[in-house]
Length: 635
Image (cartoon, rainbow, N blue to C red; front, side, top):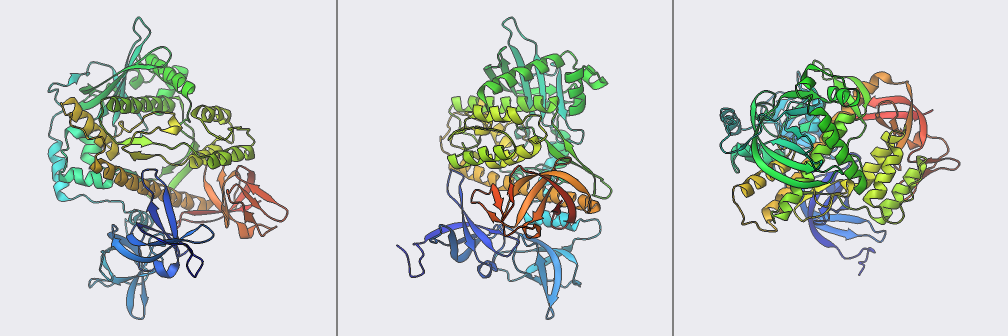
């Protein structure tokens, strides 16, 4: 039934506030285990009293045009505790000009007796029920205001309690003794990471093929669950963070540094307690058996991706590769077998081209932004970790043990149609039909592999396929074509993996009283999803700021690019050479007005049409490091 204003009956809901920098907002309501989020519009006046991430109760009403509007909003919970902004003075009172992605209005500021001059950037505390934000400290000198804004915007935790730090220091004295674990210290074991990696949590070993042709691959993972007890200060604070956050020049680890890159990290030539997933791989790439157990390893060498790829591709030996030379051909064989298996099943390659940002540690500025393409070592390690994650998911599920699974939904028919149209815009024939299967996705992936357009196509493709998430109910991971999947291989950086380790160790030590649907595990999955999204957004925002600062010195330079996204007000294009993205204001383009089609694949003017995938020439016309924006003009 419609009311007198032509609106339909409303629904009472509880949701989270999202703030748009242009002054309006949305109430985001979780629609349940499907992962769908309903977004109801909040007009600027109704948004003034709220901050991003506030949990509010209200009513949502669906208008005749199908859009939802939020009304009668009441604050239920304020998870945000800190604000960063610029001090402003109005009529003798101080206000905090807050990040416009956090609040659409300035916030009253209690200086706490400090002398604060307008223009100063400060950090303030905010709490439910308090009329003003309370000054805490200035953000200047060695602090980077833009970094502080990103951290506050996404509620990334930066400080540890003294109890947690004291516990971490005490744990560094706990030895990595055998104590009934399987001793793998004589097995040639190696880690492969980027040179800058400090939290090394995965190691690999291999045993040559037996008489039946099957080889054994060992993926041994650092085991913080053996050191950190549930419910302790350290555990609570790791859980609150849920993931490490990497902010281009600064890492905010999930565990204190003395553990994550010290006592628990898999450094070479020292004993380390681990959980090992041992997989038997036949000549066709099938994993015919999986064994999971507590172990102790001793890494023979720490390799980086470049030297590993140089050996795999060209046989180039370094002193570190020499330490595990006999294993390297079998690592290559295991990778090829798993690759063949994945090819038969379908799915998409995870490792992708990306913009590599080199940050000068002294200045915090980008000294280079360049394209980085995955090499054979990246692909090998990806295959090994995916295989282990899938094997562990299957191993736990077969035993009736619930865990945090990683799921990725099958695209609906509309999304498949959009993908096919976008592929055509890039010059490729997809021909998916009404339904997309993992094999048809893999076939398209093979088309674009190695092409000049691949980076732009892949960025659009991954965005169109949508994000994966954690949940307890079993479901497939479509992008990997995996019937069951989870995260096991990065417990120093992700709490989901940490929790999986705890579950495995509990089972190995005799626990059998598992409930198929544990509400505490459901709540944990929702929390981790929320914090993982926040960390990803923070990383993206920080990267954009660094890149914008770099591109500010290149205003006027011209580049080849591809359109990767269309909006009513802007065209987003990605540079071919560095994968840097920037926007072109639609108002600056002759031939308007331009109208965006509902599927956001075409922007049509009076005599010109822009499509996702179209090649364009652009000139850098401006950059705003504070907002992380790069502006292009069409040539």
